[in-house]
Image 1 (spheres, rainbow, N blue to C red):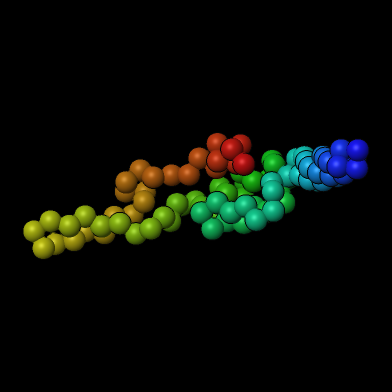
Image 2 (image 1 turned 180 degrees about the vertical axis):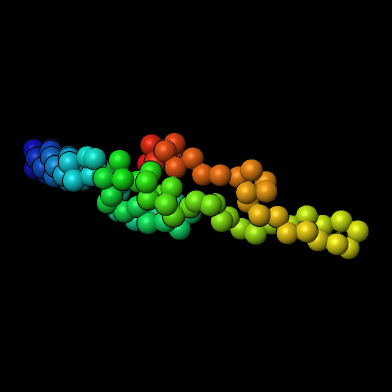
Length: 93
């Protein structure tokens, strides 16, 4: 009986903790979330896309280059057609 009571009490405590976290972050991004180095921690869900658009436009990803026959040509992200879909990225958070 004691074991059953202990299990029931721990289950209730765990459920309460999970519910508290869900309520705290109901319309917010979880703490510690970053996208391409942009901190989105605890922002309202609707504020994530504008911040990403502002911080990642133009997309500055890692530098790339194309090399052939001993020559190398630097390529910018824009040259490759890379861009950030801030709205779709923010919706996935």
